[in-house]
Image (cartoon, rainbow, N blue to C red; front, side):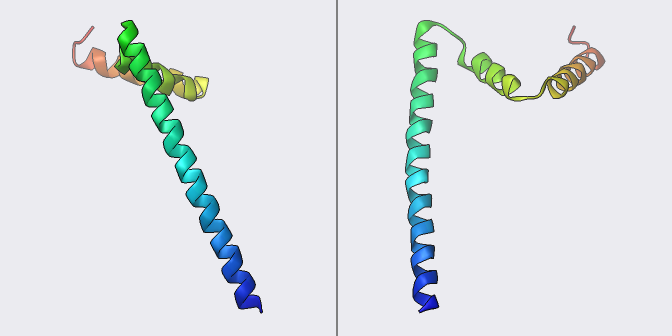
Length: 79
């Protein structure tokens, strides 16, 4: 009996994962569409992606990354 319950639980978990994967794909397609809209409006998508990535970071991590980037740029004479 417990083997049947375990198999049912496993099947339900796998089905949930499959549904979530489909939702994730749909969301990824929506995000791609928004980037396409931004590009067609004249915005630079690469810059928007950078801003999105920066906004995900905690402030102190963002400041650390910016300071490190500035240090590397100075070391390479890119200022």
